[in-house]
Length: 214
Image 1 (cartoon, helix red, strand yellow):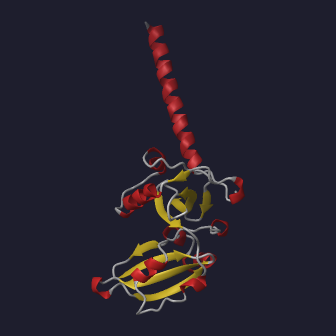
Image 2 (cartoon, one colour; image 1 turned 180 degrees about the vertical axis):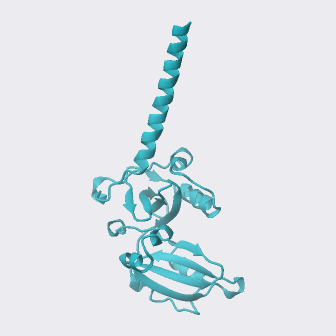
């Protein structure tokens, strides 16, 4: 009887250990990255419907916590070819529809922190039409739907990603203002840590130059 009990105990412990090791290995893979991998080396073997990306973005906008595990188990998105930057990690998926690529960011806690979809990165000169007090948020969205939103109490802030710089725009947040542009500034990608420290990339995700190719 004791022998059978020992066998059952051994099998149970072995099964638990296998599950634990498998889970641990999966977690470790989220922290593995390759910043040197080039586009020519086959980053994209799958294409995802943009509806999946929209669903994920809505969840984040509703302050729902989405983990790396959720990306695979709920949204069916495979996490691979990760890049490491000071604020966390990101990887790129090819999406169908009007947005060709989507950049998904997650932090050290393995929680999705931001999503950015883009057809192509514009040049700084493309935004020369912006005029504070005249240009509205609607004007900006008609011109470029790819941006990060950073709301504050009295202003609305959006960050646009160009090929060489960040474009940071603040709008009047009052409903009756038409959300007119109050001011805007361009910042070189690598100048922000000197101004605000590396933690700035926790708020404004970083995309390496090699990944701003489209």
